[in-house]
Length: 184
Image (cartoon, rainbow, N blue to C red; front, side, top):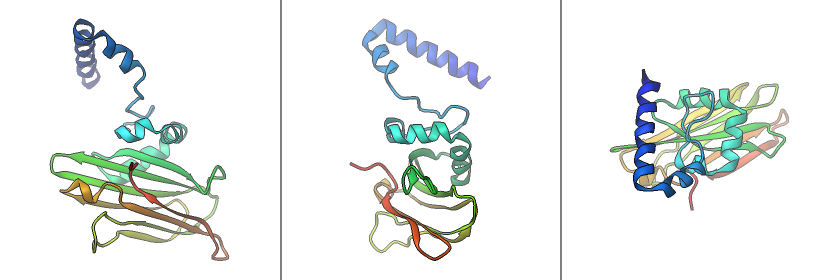
């Protein structure tokens, strides 16, 4: 039933485009897909525009879906990064949500090694003096999720997230600090 309603709405929208703005069809043909194939997970507008995020999401649909479930309802994939590089000891996923009066950012740090590692994931809201949700311990699957929700989207956007993973000798094999959202 839900697909039928969506199909009717899409059909009506397409008909309106043909009648009123044929150039809209050409533009829509080049717009990135908003939903990750094989999942119920949506890409945020920034995530849909980021080729790296789309490629990682398509190649790791099960992980993206599991992380979105841990973040909760309404979160869309904003960013995905293999860390430290193509060796991929871990993957950092960030999700955002935005609805009337409610904004959120959520991060999850996936352990892609074959053994448990000491990991730390920290998310700091873009607000001076605010507490930084942190998850640290030895994990075989993932650290997190850590999230921050606010009625003010300014505290969510450009919030720094830190992902650290240590080897058995205590040497960092991943030490990444970046914005949890794709900021200009």
